[in-house]
Image 1 (cartoon, rainbow, N blue to C red):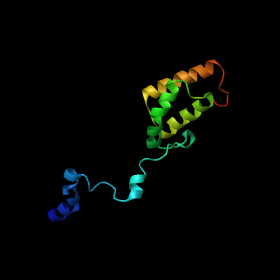
Image 2: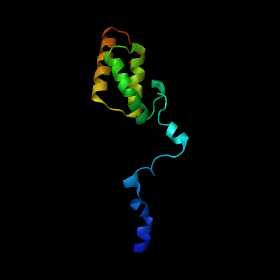
Image 3: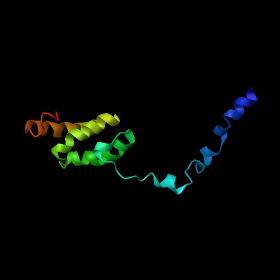
Image 4: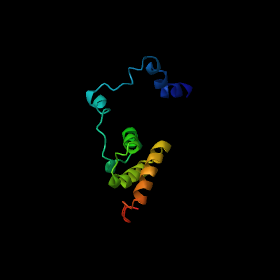
Length: 110
């Protein structure tokens, strides 16, 4: 039975650790999927999608380039994707606070 266990996990002893080339996708379709287009904020569902958007979104929030009507969809996308980043939340909270103080958000949005 020991020989069977050794065969079961034989893949662990492959040269993947030393070469690393065997684990790379060989097909062009698999490698072309990595530079995907950014997903619109209302279509974000996964952590990976949100992680791709987060840097540009944080920059836009920091620079005040996010429209008031975008704030709630951003918060919704963060909740859906379960993406938590203190810096991003800080900038979003500041913009939401500003919009609430200026009464730019409707009661339906809050």
